[in-house]
View 1 (tube, protein in one colour):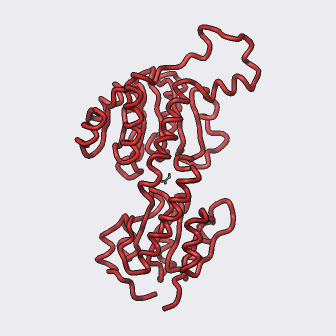
View 2 (cartoon, protein in one colour; view 1 turned 135 degrees about the vertical axis):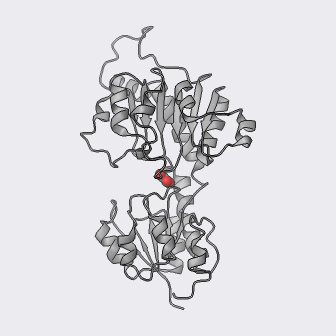
View 3 (cartoon, protein in one colour; view 1 turned 180 degrees about the horizontal axis):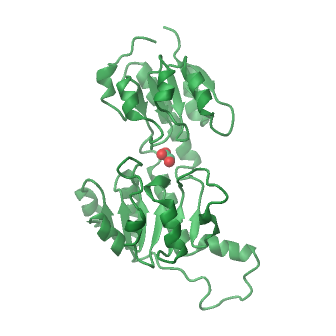
Amino acid sequence: MRKPKVYVTREIPERGLKKIIERFDVEVWPEYGPPPKQIIIEKARNADALVTLLTDKIDAEVFNAAPRLKIIAQMAVGYDNIDIEEATKRGIYVTNTPGVLTETTADLTWALLMAIARRIAEADRYVREGKWKVAWHPMMLLGRDVYGATLGIIGAGRIGSAVARRAKGFNMRILYHDIVRRPDLEKEVGAEYVDLDTLLKESDFITIHVPLTKETYHMLNAEKLRLVKKTAYIVNTSRGAVIDEKALYEALKEGRIAGAALDVFEKEPISMDNPLLKLDNVVLTPHIGSASYETRSKMAEMTADNLIAFFEGRVPPNLVNPEVMKVRPLPVKDI
Ligand code: GLV
């Protein structure tokens, strides 16, 4: 059997890349930024597998050019960049990297929540810009208490639940909304299940942990944002397009919402003329939810393990489209 051909769209951490290189005929896109779509199409022509990141748009155009393509191993938990329906129809397996990044992403969510509540980024700018002229003032840089406040979690999956556990340590009232109820989470941290409108009306902090789908696109639009308390903050470490960013900007600018801490945006990287950059009541980070050395290494290894399982004829441990097994049953023969 020849070695399967794998195209890797960026240099991923050593722990995963090494495993892939040891077993397959591999080419890696060498640049820091993502390969242009045309390059992906070209490289996919002869590839049995692609290793992708969330910045690679993988759709029918890519599949049409890739008759041998059998698996896409994505190094991310989210896979809204991949047209799963098209992949499944063509017998292309798609895998992701859930679980290993849960706590790291919950940590960042918590860091952002604390940062916006206590104005950390703004205070840092204040010191650096020489605005700190009075040693201590009773009204200087006042924020809001996190301890004992009400947290609303939209999407109580793995990451949402990990955030809820952190909130328990801060003695918070925890509300959550999801398409399914989580009696286990209710029992574990005392979370209360509420509808989305109630969550938006009652929370002091709102945090989003849903995947981006047709159903969640602009889930927080202008109308929903009007329900949020004037003193409340929104944190988003999921996908930018879950919030209507223009509507959020308007609400923040007009002081209808106290602040937002955002790791994800409708367009990434953010353009320098994005008006959010001008607001002091916003904390911005560049999509770094899972960005720890440990976690990125684990994600790369998991990506490799999914590929290896597939080419050894086993069901990849993190298959996102199991219906594909009916279209192209395992083990695959045409390599
Ligand atoms: C990051 O956003 C991921 O989906 O893993």
